[in-house]
Length: 171
Image (cartoon, rainbow, N blue to C red):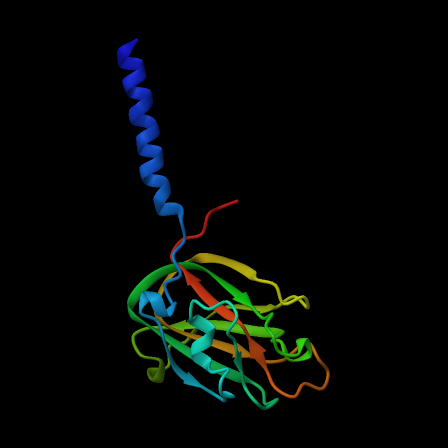
């Protein structure tokens, strides 16, 4: 009986230990060493850096309605990833929130070509977080391209947050 209880505790301990690996880490965030290395346009104080900072109230805006808008990010090293989240909703005009986007990845250097398109999606009109799961891949650079907004006559383009996750919990 004591052996059964010991095995049960060991089993529970292992589940707790390995479940920690299921918690997704945002590997492109500033806190993880991510950087914004290129952007088409930005309007101060809503700079491109705001897309990957920890402040949920900050956002990026282009200042002009020019398409496509492109923001390129880098991580310190090539890493494995399997998902993204994108949030368009911000304090700006909802007609300017990003709508049609494409996410691509490259390694070793973005200027050498080699961009691989990972996903092209339409963000919801309510601007809420969109979670995107993909097959596991590796990369160091990410390119977020925005092709349209939710308004027919936008004055600029804006987006609140972009995250890249090392692991995604399967539903």
